[in-house]
Amino acid sequence: MTVTKSKILIVEDDPDVAEMLTAYFRSQEYDVSTVNWGEDGVRSAQQSTPDLVILDIRLPDIDGYEVARRLRTDRRTGDVPIIFLTEKRDRADRLQGLEIGADDYITKPFDIQELRLRVRNALKRVSQGSLTNPVTGLPEGALVDEKLSEVLGKDGFALLFVSLANMDSFREVYGFVASDDVLRAVSLMIGNTMREFSRPDDFLGHLTGTDFILVVPPSNLAALSEKLRSRLDQSVEYFYPIKDREQMAKRTDRLGAKLAEVATLKGYTTDVEQVKAELLNHKNR
Image (cartoon, rainbow, N blue to C red; front, side, top):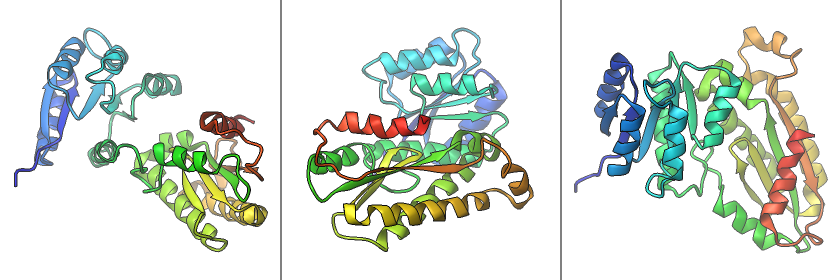
């Protein structure tokens, strides 16, 4: 049986980097095409839709941000995953890329194995239709919306929101692989704690990549929240290398967890987006 290779479009003006990436991803059994100019990248993607784009920001004609904008506003390429590959390290630059709709942002010099994992995860997310998170395997997107629609306005259900704070700062210092390890560890910790209070209707999923939502019975909410808060608070420092733990304990941008409880869903309407917005608002308080 013939296996269709995933198509990767690389838009990179540095010939050495472009050649290295092309050779590497072809060795990983991807169908790779490469262009050196932004306009050529847009044209190539529109002519033959890739499964993923690796996009440099600094290009000789239009920049990578403009390329991404055009891809996102074109019906043919609007959902294609984009990974920015760039020398820009400022938080504002990264946020600009993410606001346009980039799926990932990796700075040069980069670890090719890390980039390989980011490509694999992005392609896996697309193939699964964004129903499960590629890092933790937990439900997200439509599956979470479906569960919320099922329980909103009903007795016997409560929500617990768990948000990981300062993951961006952690990722900038230690990289995507380390931040993925944190997400997996936290998801396992939440799941294991839930099982101590479990019932068949309990649910754990993602609101965003770093935000979790739990649907549990109101009778278990307080005890579960207290135990989970305690375990997360005690565990955070161990995500850092030993040499950095003392220093990070004094910093305001260290990893942390914020929890919010919704004790009853009976008075809520069935507006899932409103409930999600209220929970995500908790992160900024």
